[in-house]
Image (tube, rainbow, N blue to C red; front, side, top):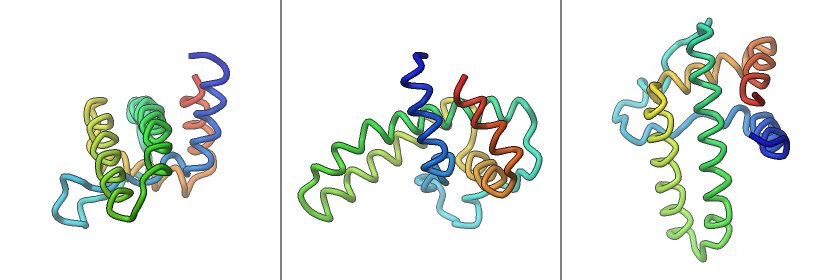
Length: 123
């Protein structure tokens, strides 16, 4: 990965709060949108960092389409498509949306964990 992309991803991680929680597209019960992951393992953090890179790439891909959408209905359609693609990317990496969101929450609340993830995302 080139330096420009690493810089973009690191900036995205910071700006997006580690891409923020994903919409639980496939989750009916809102309570299952988060899985409590207060102390993620190194393996979980590696998978999470890989997922953040993929989610950030999807967000960057869909941002121009979102900006070009003409009305609220078109914008919503782009958001739904992007959310689904983000969920697919996270799940393809071996994580559930609930686990991803739980780690996102832990990272937002723990500055030391946040720095560790930022380093992993930048690799």
